[in-house]
Image 1 (cartoon, rainbow, N blue to C red):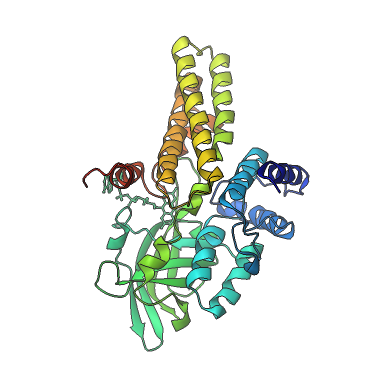
Image 2: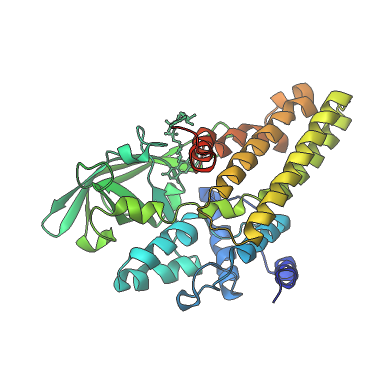
Length: 369
Ligand SMILES: Cc1cc2nc3c(=O)[nH]c(=O)nc-3n(C[C@H](O)[C@H](O)[C@H](O)COP(=O)(O)OP(=O)(O)OC[C@H]3O[C@@H](n4cnc5c(N)ncnc54)[C@H](O)[C@@H]3O)c2cc1C
């Protein structure tokens, strides 16, 4: 099947697939209230063979190429639906378990992720370990066959609704070799999840506290001390959706122009700004299509350019809300105002813009550190 045939097939299916009434494109992370519709939608995707497209066929996936995954992400965005329940289970935990898990772990954890029965969260960032993740301090202490976890994570997306978490914790003093990856059942005693409310009013992430949480020995993922290798190897899957965001950005740009016209604020300066953004969105989409068309590895630096450009266009688009709405931007609830408030998050999550610039400077341009 050619890429265009695949696109047509996906578009037709998405148009006619039964969708829960409450479903909308909530992005990579559902809020607590989005989870029931998200689970139901993921089950529909699974039954039609569109869940976990990138997984190998032996684990129920479709062995989809990067290009096919990208097409699916774009068509899902066009249809206004999420491409899966959330990012962490299918894109991060699943591939990590396939590559580093035991046979028993694969049998236990993969099928419920594929069906959308289990929602996973990523327990990496800490109050003093974000960009510099290797300085994490959450500790895992061996206790006979078990492990005892103490510490704190933060910015954990979907922690409040997650069934399982992929945790990295310190098992030794070495900066990298002292890190081990674990699977955590989020209902275990000693885990406290405290939701954080964002300035847009939503609550998509939480602080997670571990107080003497006892994990069974078979919770270790990969080898003890190999946690850094285990987790960094599969980072970057969220980058698949980067270019797909262009679909929503064009739509938002139209909303900005309409709102500005309605408010009598569409002057030549704003017109110029809108046109410049329009070109940047086209460039983003074209670069993304070129990268995925060549089946470029998602870990490639090319995707750092895309991460940087897409999040900064997203932010600048949000900032136009005030130019388009005038003082009406002060009234809460307008979708453009919401876009403005969440705009910054994109330039932080999954590696900040400064970190992307460092990567490009050092690994692509060969500049000194
Ligand atoms: C919406 C959202 C969802 C998230 N979801 C999750 C999740 O599910 N799980 C999880 O573990 N984490 C999650 N995060 C956390 C995210 O990974 C971190 O916020 C990110 O890595 C940055 O870390 P930090 O917030 O500690 O900032 P810091 O690393 O403290 O950075 C602060 C500032 O310093 C700059 N800076 C830092 N180091 C350098 C450097 N070397 N050179 C130049 N500038 C630098 C940064 O760019 C930033 O501007 C999420 C974040 C957001 C915004």
